[in-house]
Length: 225
Ligand SMILES: Cc1cc2nc3c(=O)[nH]c(=O)nc-3n(C[C@H](O)[C@H](O)[C@H](O)COP(=O)(O)O)c2cc1C
Ligand code: SF4
Image 1 (cartoon, rainbow, N blue to C red):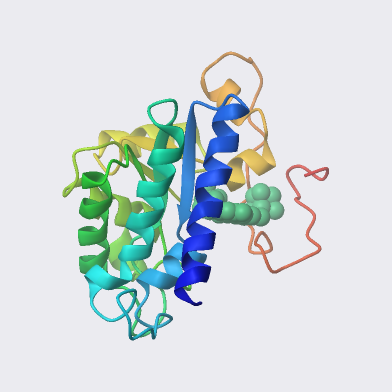
Image 2: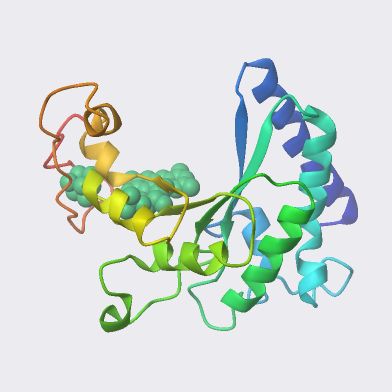
């Protein structure tokens, strides 16, 4: 990307953010995880630039921080801005958790109001199940970020039952829990968890076929999903 490309895409982030406020949303989540563009800039394995956007961590974080600045300028106080941040890469020579913790602090200092913690390029680093215990690698990453920032941290990954979400909160891993597959298996999961709908949850079976690259898949818990 030329500097012009960088500026143009940052302006696109700002324009998209502006549209979310015009559409009436109260909050917007920037995507800075999973190997998308912000995540690529952060990753030393992907980012081979030799200008001020590559090399040192400060340089690799520049793109993300400038996006936040431009988005803030576009939406003002009308919308809460937060970010889904890949705080560590799942590939060799990628972003380390130590670096991700520093980026998290810089983003908070720049005005991001929450952090939704996930993996970066290649997903989250693998964790030995013996060490991981009951919690997914991404939830454990959230716990590592929670200790270095003073904004709410959203944790995600492997939560199937509402009780597990409560237990993760009680254990202090995160301040909020996000749920993916369990809500694919039962779109009414949250209403049922809250007791607003009195019916059993269609429980996600955590089967291996659920994922981006394994199409077509049929969800055994919710065939219409
Ligand atoms: C079929 C499928 C599609 C997904 N699509 C996205 C996506 O577009 N953007 C994103 O940030 N995460 C996406 N994810 C990841 C989820 O947001 C979530 O982080 C992940 O599934 C772990 O949470 P869970 O165990 O509660 O599902 C997807 C996950 C699945 C299973
Ligand atoms: S396909 Fe399997 S893992 Fe995915 S939501 Fe359905 S039951 Fe859960």
